[in-house]
Image (cartoon, rainbow, N blue to C red; front, side, top):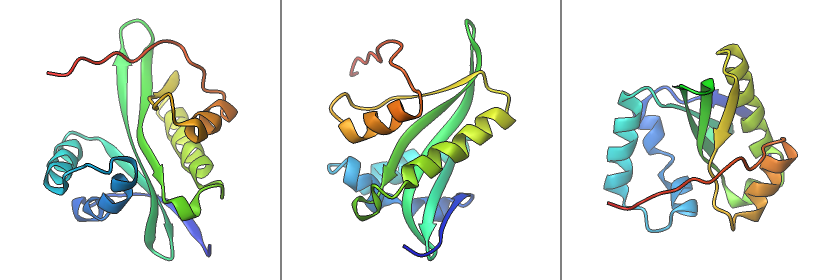
Length: 142
């Protein structure tokens, strides 16, 4: 691990480079669907950050700002993924810190995320950062 840098991804082509990372979390992900989804997200102001080591993307995370009637402005974290060989090196922590600073700058009242209940490593990281389970994320497939 040389020089880890956290930065915004501002070009769609650079986002397409994150496909191998997403395959780690979502092994059945189709590359064309992935690219279509990224294109839609990029065009609809979903922001992306990454961690790089010598210009190689080793971690990625998406986020967006929103407003809820009952609780005001918030920031949503989506798909925080770190390459396995870089885990346990505080890279996930650096991404969370970076996003928390954005949330504070944007005057969000809180920030939220979803994770799989069986993802114990992620749950440990989020718990360490004072995220608390406040409800359930319900989904119905269409």
